[in-house]
Image 1 (tube, one colour):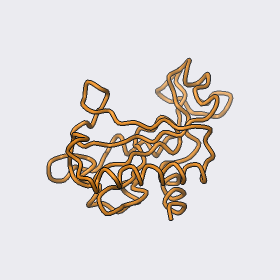
Image 2 (tube, rainbow, N blue to C red):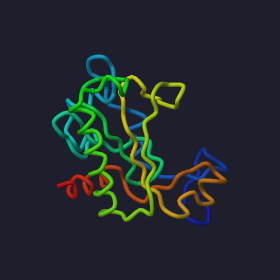
Image 3 (tube, one colour):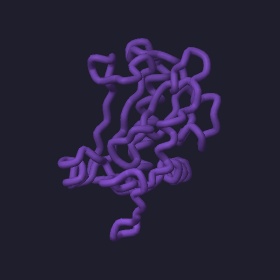
Image 4 (cartoon, rainbow, N blue to C red):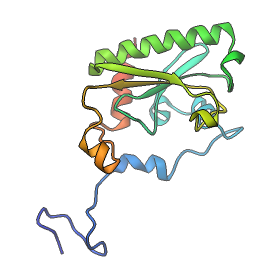
Length: 173
């Protein structure tokens, strides 16, 4: 049986289906290597598979698998380190330089009105992967918290993460 817009409801009476093949990454994530840190695992994957946008000497930029907004990425050291004060001078400098370049690239690719940039140090501070320091770069647009987000707790993303990664990686240079 189909509803008026042609969506089949076999066995799911009262539920619409939303086709989201990109969400398979949440269901079947890559198996962590070594110490189990998902960020450290990315070093062993192709950029297309890990959503890495750019790799530097001591840091890299990667799209957030759970983005707040389109283009939400993270900049982090290659080395597994949790505390900001434990970064080397080179890591700290490249972390900020790469964050600056991330802002430039996102501005060029998608023209956001503003950014939220920040680090959550420790689990209590909101760091879900606090054992590997990472800085969030979140593009913001006027009205990006619209009725869908406010009323249904759902964020809409206009592009697959793999497509966003490709655009940002191409614009990085």
